[in-house]
Amino acid sequence: MLVLAIESSCDETAAAVVEDGRLVRSNVIASQVEEHKIYGGVVPEIASRRHAESISAVVNAALHDADATLSGIDCVAVTYAPGLIGALLVGVNYAKSLAYAAGLPLVPVHHLRSHVAANYLCSPAPRPPFLALVVSGGHTHLVRVSDYTTFTVLGKTRDDAAGEALDKAARAMGLPYPGGLNLDRESKGGDPTAFRFPKPRVDGAPLDFSFSGMKTAVLNLLHNAGQRGETLNLKDLGASFQYAVASILCEHTERAAKAGGDQTIVLAGGVSANSVLRAQMRALCKKNGWHLYAPDLPLCGDNAAMVGAQGYHEFLAGHVSGPGLNAYATMPIDAVTF
Image 1 (spheres, rainbow, N blue to C red):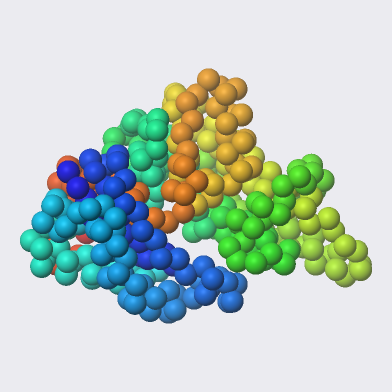
Image 2: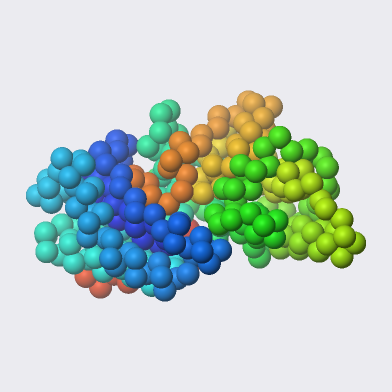
């Protein structure tokens, strides 16, 4: 079964052809990073316009690279939530038109579900049930995945996402966009114990996260040092901040896994590429005898292959929409509607 998948939730225009939810036949991405770098972050209006300009060529390239035609495609899967609404609408409307014209089923895919599904494209690949830590610039969730389309949120951030905190810290340290990626690169070799950061807890919700206080702490360190005319060792500061964020993510994951008796842990989302988080999570799972899965680095960020992987399972579950499909800026991972 061949799925043509389309992704446009933020600043990557992507299309892919995925076979049986596991094999990537093609995966094409038109990145806007260099353009948004000028502004220090994604400008939604610019992102939407670039999606509109690129999407047709990207989809055609995905079909070409897969040596496929629309007549050989079984369904069209598209990210419809959550994300930048203008960006999502470009992908959703293109997918609706393409599916209608070609007489193909249209499969709506939740963006966070597809990040989890990126792991299905790697070898070895996990099979539900498992516990997933989904960490990105806009989301931080602990989710129990009972089967390919059944998700239960166990904990989530109450304010900033972990990726947002990393990005803001990087920007305050003078690193260019994308902040989290450059923070990881520039902090290698730094002392992760040089600076101490608070470990916020949410009263009555031990699996929920809060990163706004940590973000404020690093900003205050930089501001106070500047007021005193001091220069901080940014390599050590970056290493310490990443270590603190990763430690919190691992501690909550361990708490959830032990409470639920989980033996399989899955990392997902853009921040799953962070080298400090991956190292700490490997150590955690080795200590407890758990199996750890994480996407290959090229599949950690936004791409359409992961949409195709999840779209395959959504299609098998009968989650098919029609021309009335809309895009949504927000939507819980465990309460999908379309």
